[in-house]
Length: 259
Image (spheres, rainbow, N blue to C red):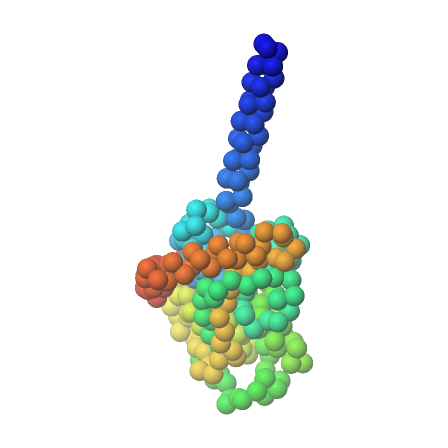
């Protein structure tokens, strides 16, 4: 009888321990690691809350009891590491690229981008209608950008650089003629990283290269990605319904995500 009691006691202890391990694992599952690039004021390690988009992502997951951590990497590496399952998601990517859907599930849009060509104020662009009209321009681009791929796919020669700063410096030095970038990102960068006199030398063309929504992407090689997409979308919908999204966006327009 005593032996039977001891066996039952041991079984109860094992059940308790296993439950503890399971609960611990569940807690770990409620944290999400996301790869991100630098694209202030939308995403940046040096911006308040990681920039507007990454703040929004954190707030959306928080609504569903999840915590988020971001690693800021070169864009191409951020994409490839997430694609290979080294991150649970990657922030953030234009919805224009069909290639992405082969490897990723997309969330609801987290922002709306308007990509324009920046140029020297003294050298405004000629009127153009299609990308082939740009063939005589020296075009600066950033490695891994959606606009870079679009221009290359159109058969245009581009001058790649790893960072926004490099492209603007090339523009000021007269080494390139135009440089595609999201309009808010470009203006933010000029205001924070260059002198007033330097920034005044640069303007942008009114005609956008493209306008698109952009989303958080979850790799298809991860078994829980579809569930995480649903969780994130639910949190984002709550933020929009409660007006929190609009509050954060107004903060963006007021410069509160400035580096």
